Amino acid sequence: MAPLANRDAKTIHSSVEPLGETGPMEKHPAPLTAGNVLARLAGIGVLLLAVVGAFLYLGGWFSPRKLTPVRFVDEFERVNGIHSGFRRNHAKGVGVRGFFDSNGQGVRLSKAVVFQSGRVPVIGRFSLGGGDPHASDELGNVRGLGLQFSLPDGEEWRTAMINLPVFPFKDPQAFYDNLVASQPDPNTHQPDPAKGVAFIASHPETARAIGIIKSGAPSSGFDNSAYYGLNAFRFVNADGASIYVRWALAPVQPYEAGSGASVDKNLNKNFLFDGLIASIRQHPLQWRLIMTVAQPGDPTDDATIPWPEGREQVDVGTLTLDSVESEKTSPARDINFDPLVLPAGMAPSNDPLLSARSAVYSQSFTRRAGETKEPSEITPAEVRK
Amino acid sequence: MSASTTTDRQQFNASMRFLHWLMAAAVLTILGIGVAMVASLGGYHSLVSIHRPLGILILILVVIRFVNRLRSTLPPFPATMSPQERLAAHASEVLLYTLLFVQPLVGWAMLSAARYPIVMFGSLHLFPILPHSVMLYAFLRKAHTFLAYLLFLTFIAHFSAILFHTLIVRDGMLNRMVPWRVRAR
Ligand code: HEM
Ligand code: HEM
Ligand code: HEM
Image 1 (cartoon, rainbow over the protein chains, first blue to last red):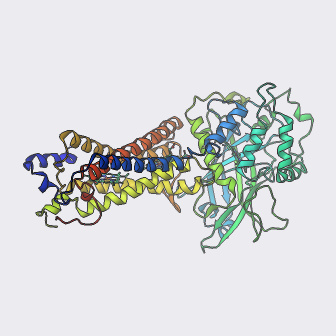
Image 2 (image 1 turned 60 degrees about the horizontal axis):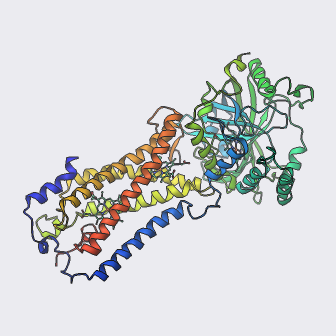
Image 3 (image 1 turned 180 degrees about the horizontal axis):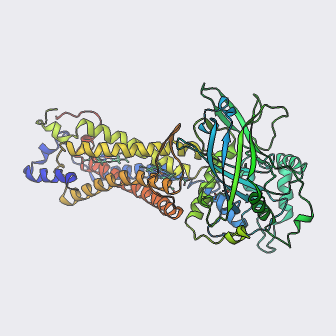
């Protein structure tokens, strides 16, 4: 880099001047005593330590018990083991594609481009909650749907929803503590039921949420499930007016209660996924995207509490999913359905889950991104059969 | 600016001084935000939302600063610096400029490879500069951490050298870069 060096050239050319003239800005100070030098060196040392210390402090080095994204994902790995290339939660899944037809009704809620009338392409992923990519499907498993809407102006909206009407944990610490409670005991290789009981006893909001969840029977499949965004978001419309909403996908496919007969998991450990594949092959699957608008005072920071009945609901359009493929070929595998990838016009609420999800998903994504991708349970052959 | 007086030659010119301190503040801030955000659950989203545009601002500033440096007359090294020190000072400046240029590019590139939208603010976002590849993302994400720590260490070396010259050698090295004008005695 020659230009950076022109100072050297210059100094060499300008014949070496005596110190008094090259340092004209400094008065000639009395020489430092050895003690002075030591004191000044110590001062420099303290200053440098302070700067380094400040950075270590910011990086959490002095708070080994603080819950960080790294420690959160470590805990997922302690509970589930490490499955190379898979998500640390919602590990088992398939990719889907389709589109969203906006009916324009959402425009008065949010200026986000996705709500203007028209169609945008969607990539999605259906998943089962839990970190085992080869888990057997169970009706009671949490079902997930991650979606990425690609908007015409290059923006994106990503969301990850589940089939529960409320979330069992009100903040990241509660989610984490429950993970710790469900960690297998090193001797029995089973979680200790007493820890689960103790967790519920100390988290009344979780007990209440589970009560709400248990009051409805899960539907028979992925295709006729509703999916809930659960966290509240702040919407801003073109006039600058802001409101809080929660969203959900209501299935157009009629509800059918999951029956005991279809749940013989000895027959097929992938019955939920196979059901989805069969269903999407017969006809495109559809959901209506419903925005529920909060009234002042409705909790926006606690996903364990449902908003009262009778809140305004706006049907903003229809999601159609018309093809399904194995994670092996689907772009969905390599997407992080981070719930805070939002277009202008949508913003997070004060719900403490949101920023934490963004941070933890990023850490999970970073780890799996660099690993060899082991084959998914739902292989391309499984999708074709 | 009359380049003839000794004072002018002993101090970096005003634009270089301005850019130096503007960028020093920006770089220390982004380093602090960077290490804090990856260790935070609640602060992560707001911090990363500042981190991205601030990083791109640094990329723009370093280009302006480099061009400005090429067009400026630099004050000669003080005679108190040995040839080895000059070499070290020169090398650290090359390293600082390189890191300030490469680090934000790596940030932009890694988000491109992961196919995150690279949101600046509102609906303004950058185009991706790499194809979608999570393996590439994983590599660049590690590089981003490594380069950040390297940048921090280079800064510490730079800071130590200036403090040593200013407080121990007492050759008024700091005066060469202070934001205000320092007149000759
Ligand atoms: C603090 C609370 C939560 C934590 C720590 C957490 C953790 C995780 C992690 C680590 C992943 C894997 C991410 C990846 O590697 O791409 C994940 C995926 C997922 N989460 Fe959460 N989660 C939380 C709350 C929620 C909530 C409230 C919902 C539903 C509204 C949800 C729905 C999902 C879904 C559907 C996926 C799968 C998305 C996909 O297919 O990539 N999670 N979660
Ligand atoms: C991350 C923060 C910093 C960066 C990236 C940085 C970068 C640089 C660079 C590249 C130069 C060469 C001149 C130029 O091209 O502008 C320089 C010179 C200088 N910097 Fe910094 N600097 C930082 C922080 C500081 C701090 C905190 C101090 C105060 C102690 C300082 C004091 C100086 C001085 C006095 C010079 C002139 C050295 C000479 O006489 O040749 N810098 N800095
Ligand atoms: C001079 C410029 C930059 C510096 C000094 C810097 C510094 C850092 C640091 C220290 C970290 C934390 C690393 C770790 O501990 O693992 C980080 C992470 C990160 N940086 Fe930068 N960065 C810069 C520019 C950028 C740019 C331009 C972007 C994107 C446009 C960016 C995006 C990110 C992201 C997304 C993360 C990690 C988030 C995560 O893993 O969840 N950075 N950066």
